[in-house]
Length: 131
Length: 143
Image 1 (cartoon, rainbow over the protein chains, first blue to last red):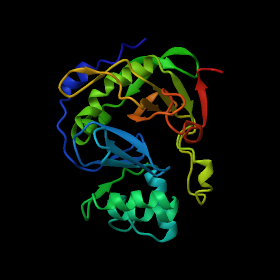
Image 2: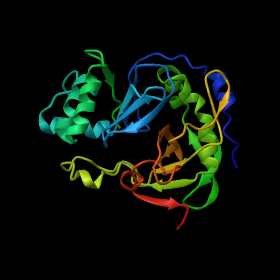
Image 3: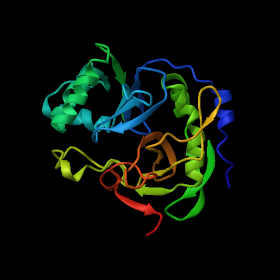
Image 4: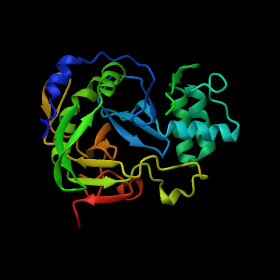
């Protein structure tokens, strides 16, 4: 049997050094971007989007776009271009957020996407590793 | 990295895994609390209050998502519960935030791919909100 998870050893070897930068998680097939280095919780919006909110005042401090490769394929079928270049798996984050409601959401959730757009820098891109 | 936990499918101790590349990304691009929350991960995988199989299922009340939504891993797991403590950036221990439960997500091989505090079900505090529609089935505890 394996040992217990040694968190102290992980933290010692990997001292946190936060930088607000989007990244792709191949394990979860998602893109994440955090705006602030604060204590937060996850609030699921729909099957595409989870927003991260600060515990102190529930402001949005980050987000996760889920099922991202399926989502990009859906955009392709709808003729919505989020790729930085043709056949590239580098995507424009603001375009992806903008187009999500075209795929599937509710009017209430559309406002969440709209609010999120104001927090993402123009031309912020992230590379997806194609599975 | 391998560590021990409870497999809700077999109700036996089992080996969980955490990819070091995830740790590297969390170190650089996620808030400091993300790695500190590994203290909660350890507690929940050792003794989950509830576990679900099948992630990313679609909210039935929201209708058909135009056939694009797939189930990448219907056998993935969510283990959830309220840890006895959490560790804050100043090193102090604190109680779980009221109204929230901690969730650990793994694939079918028990490879952890995310963990977060999420809003609790108002009826059952240790259960995630909307657990009835966001997961495939509850597999632990057996009822």
